[in-house]
Length: 310
Ligand code: 6CS
Ligand code: FE
Image (cartoon, rainbow, N blue to C red; front, side, top):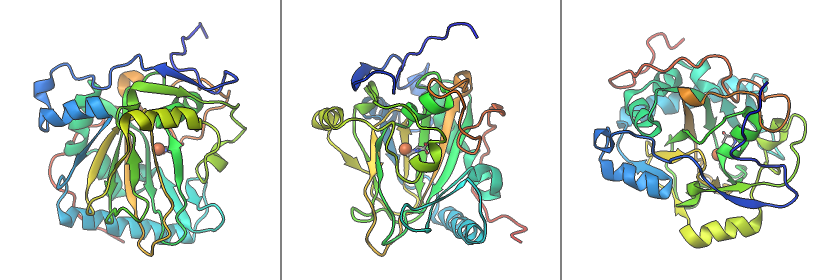
């Protein structure tokens, strides 16, 4: 392969480094064409995320929550790399690739309300790079340590540039106590190059408890000092769009109330993944789409219970 420039080197230098982002946060050619209030997109540009309440109707959230439970029951009797258990217990933590196995979440991934806004922000057509359910069970749900998703997707999956975003939809109420998503406003403009070589088959460990590709305390302190922390609390159905490089994490959940969310990651088709920038071997395709970069066709209308819910 010919020389390929690495704009965001990480896990290479002996010490941490804070680099400037070289890509725009909002790629939209026409800000006024936003499918939501353009002020929200301006905010996304500044802060690295935006929150929408009431994007989905209660009935739609109910359908998704039933599907979450159905998949959990199925997972209990199953084994597979895409089923991630909590560290220190066998309680279900995450299920990946749900947009490929579940008709409800496949439908969600193509939903016009999500796809059009993702296309607007990313200034391109989009495909799903990754999808997952996070269960964050009551009592046992462990934290997700601070990280930039892009750092991992770049180093381990070969995502070239910052032109991707995550949508997280809460399927249960997110309170200040049950380990809600925390985001650092403004952090999307900085790239914290992390320290330490990636161990082989890192995903087996990192998805339970991440220890490589995490930012150093001094860089984190600086980002939080500059931007503070915003907590994404709200009723079931609350939706957050956040940039692939926004620093985020969540605390453990020792309350009785689980905090379950569905995540869909949209990547610009022009930013499809190639060879990883770190390890030779890419991660398995349940974590990163590597074959099908067909742009999604947005589906209008409401999400319904699948007819043949066998
Ligand atoms: O490794 C990954 O790709 C995933 N890990 C985390 C903690 N967040 C984003 C992504 O789903
Ligand atoms: Fe993440």
